[in-house]
Image 1 (cartoon, helix red, strand yellow):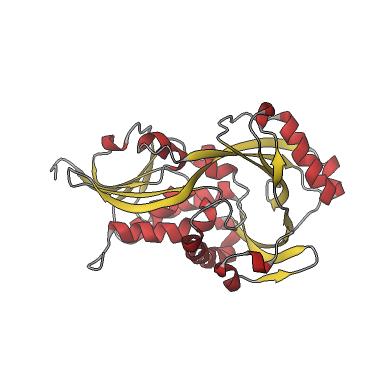
Image 2: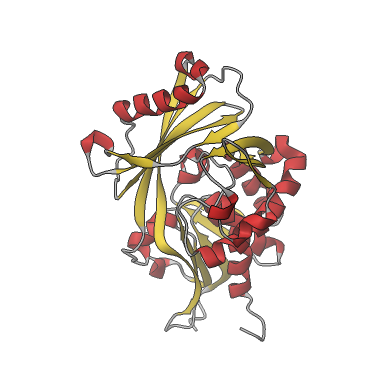
Length: 322
């Protein structure tokens, strides 16, 4: 191996998956630096609705364990919600039934009702949570550096952990990673304290583009009520579409009429990094460097962050059985 390589672990990507993975690595004794093209409120993670739920992520046989491991962490963090941004909030997944879910659901407090599945689940204020993750990383000796990476080969470290999300499409490169565009509207909360989601249906994309899916959901966050949502595959625009925004408000107001008169505070757009299956594996490069991939989490990066982070850390330190 090149003796000029750093013995630090470089984590590429500063979203929730990258920061959580960096925290786990730093707290296990590694010197860790996060290289992030964007950090904090400018990441895709920052604009997420952030309700814990396995949404648009594969493969199902692995997702359940990752999600449940993360759920346990979030339940603990909810005891310090002001610092961590994690709260346990009641709500309903309209139209869903227990028998339509995977085996993981048997270990989650869900109840069938006439409206759908009722549950008390983690709801995460992402700007606060991302700040808390960064602080926890720094307390463990890690750092975050805003830096544009154009290819993984330029990361001169003995161990590189690739948590670049949609960026993996060009960094690896991996054309299997595709954007699924999501748009939200933030309004003044008219007094709603529970979350709500409904099933998706087909609709036109931004600007009348390719079809995707739309749904009605609202999440009460400290900064306002988040209304959604959309899921348009292979759509790259980060500009809010006013017609889509109007449709979001109308669908949510059909469920809770008081939303119709709520003052709009802002619009958010994010590109979910979808892949047919999450890539979570180790790769030994020809020069002896170790590259661990942890990307392609679709709309469930928050939901599986801790489970995937711990598995990724185990790939860095695989032990004798690996």
